[in-house]
Length: 313
Image (cartoon, rainbow, N blue to C red; front, side, top):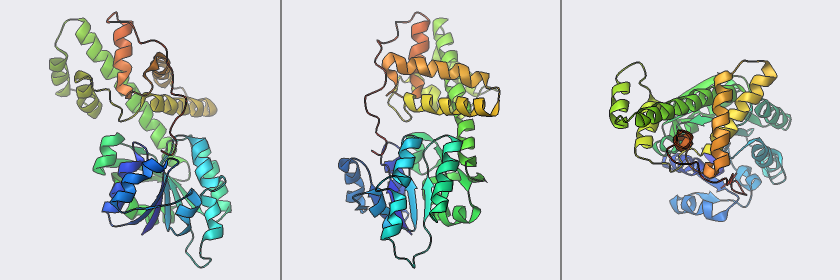
């Protein structure tokens, strides 16, 4: 299959490499030329724009920062929709897949507008972080047309293991928002538990070991808990991204009149984490925030987010 891949950040780069390893012909585009270099070395073609990348493709995949970035690469000047003027009129209809995490309403709107241009659209956000992207073991939650989903399955199989067609357009993003509730609250809970143990003078590694064998055992405790013990705050999933995702949850909950108290409380901790200048660290850095609030050293000085977020690295 000929695939165009747009966005080569922490997640996109290894996902694109797995498509190459799966035998697909790949054309890539990213805002920064240096981000494309590792893919070019691996055998991918490099395009000058999203439109030129999509012109000869059967399937287009994007993974960028947020809804405005998706809208730009899909519908903006030089975006995927502009590829229609460059394509063979006898070519099969183009299928576009966005694997970013955006609001369900935004996904539905982008999908409808692409549909008016004859492009089938799937919202297919992922879970599993950088580790899952590298291993090709992501969980992929898909919303959109069933035929388009079946067409994209060979590409999904190169990037993930748990691939679920959740429902109609936007359903993938609803599932991802639910995922971010569980992971956000879970990361905060594990950090709180380990900080509680440490402040009571107990070996946190032994506490984690004990909890893993009981009802509190979870993948978050197993994986993220170990990284907290190792003080490994290198981003697999940046704190500002989790803040953004929880904001999506709260906006959607407000629109639907849904009670989401744990999401709201957790979002405040991630707001504070980003406000303390830790937005570029992994979301498990919420442990540092709790330690500071518990008297184990003051939180870092305010720094906030970097001036520029890499939306299509």
